[in-house]
Image (tube, rainbow, N blue to C red; front, side):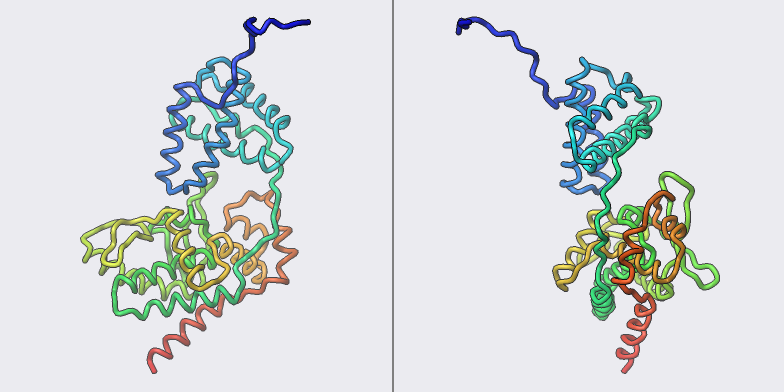
Length: 339
């Protein structure tokens, strides 16, 4: 059949990931909130990519659906849509997790009655082989952090003590950067000679984690200089951590990205294998070697009881850590200073 080139062909509308004006404003506010929490540009980009997938689905299956109409049926169909669209378990899982967090945001604004995404099955997460900071690098960093405290500049001494506290909270107690950024002074306690840190978990009751023995000595020195420098900077805050320039404290609190940058600087300066994540993985191996029960380790890490530590247990013989060496290095340095 011959086709008349002048004939107008009727085609369906082009489907895009452009959300409705209502949804666009809400997603923009959602991204702004994430940025205010200290999320990196790369993380924000990933959230946008994941929600663009949801927007494309909405434009494909619905016509100008209102946010208040988002229900279990719509979300369940999105789950089926992801099953067809992606062969990768991790791709499907990431998009479900992004949407769950976005629905939590909508729920906080009372725009939906519940979060049906929490009932949507996620694909099993691919568990990569743990790559902890090697013990030699743990010792290298700790030694360097202690040597930094020798400065005659009080603000530099304070910064080094802050970073020692960061180190002990991650390698000693397995805290995530998101946990660290929210910590208050009152979250540190000392009971019967044992230092503990309080963690406020978003999905269950708060709990405490034991800290290394050396923490009490470092903390005492940290608090002394911190109060001195807060007075000098004419600033007051309850946060355990802080931002500062080379001259004074700027503000209380330290964002997750700010913490990551601190460790990036040490990694590049010392040329060691180091990220907050790899140091946290080293803590897990340390606990396994201390014969802590898997249930206690998962509780301290804020993980669900169903989380599998199999890979850590299997690789534990390959990664040996000794927490007592931290105090040994501290004592040796102090003795050297006295002489």
